[in-house]
Length: 88
Image (tube, rainbow, N blue to C red; front, side, top):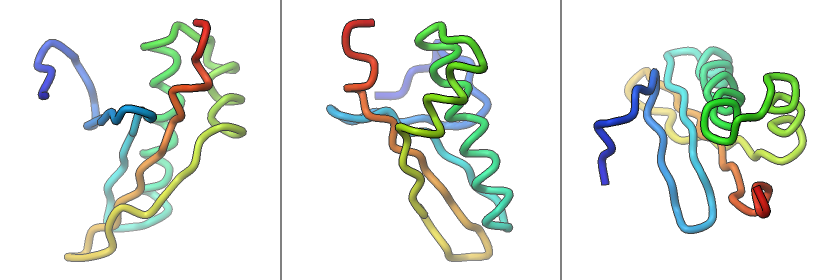
């Protein structure tokens, strides 16, 4: 489902078990930086965590994966387990 009511800088996705943030760039390091920024932003905006708490949570609970490496673009996505927000 596409949510047009959300104002996002970058696409996000959701599965039954994870929230997913993304970053795309021709340079893999830059794609990773974009993804991490979006990943830190997610718990701040959606779960109302402070920036410091969101950064710490991202550093210990989130897995980064390579999404694509074709056509001159590199993609990284972050898998944020929904279980880390249980009870919130």
